[in-house]
Image (cartoon, rainbow, N blue to C red):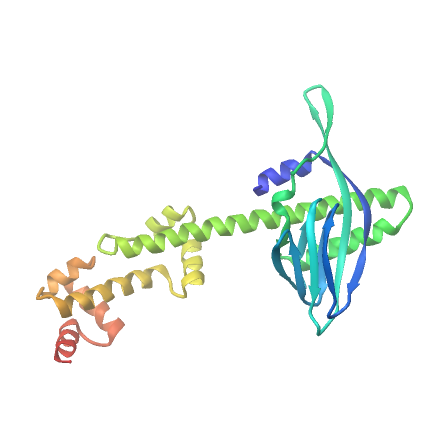
Length: 280
């Protein structure tokens, strides 16, 4: 389920919270597998351990959210060094929406099943504040507090949906940038510009350069140069090509510019490099 589908699903849903509170899982404890039969959300406040959900292990720690759906086979192990504190919310919900002139109520089916497991957070403090808000409002008995509790729970789900959206965006963006990395490797002989590569990735040139460096530790322009110079090194040592031809083979029309770039990267001129390597 992508973020748009999740938002549409939540928009058509009516929630009923059956419990909101916090629990301490003692250090060193283990709970054998059992079927977790309700919808619930866990926010890990502190501590470390392992949740196993339908056979998939998740290392839990502060700032993580765990999403449960009915019929989840669940077990947990807590590290021996410290307790785990969790906020958890149990809830039920139905799909309630208007279709043309008629109001419809439907069971949610497996609407949230694809989200079962861990959701890593970019803004854990905001999520914790909303868990805490739901917890405090749910304990109040008056109708106004209960209505506020419902709104806070929807706000919590909105924030989680935004986290899903952001993760999917970054995942898609990283895949696109990885594609350009491989494209450079295969097309280093061709004219390559940052604008061209950024367009392939579907993002702005500035954003592309920053994310490329974050992923690979070097900017795209410098990476192109290094790929070309590495191939030039091989050609200088293994072929009898003159400098002009070597430069053209690795994407440079100007042999003098190529020589300057080569010396900046290697500390040697192309001819000195070739002599030294052949003498070894």
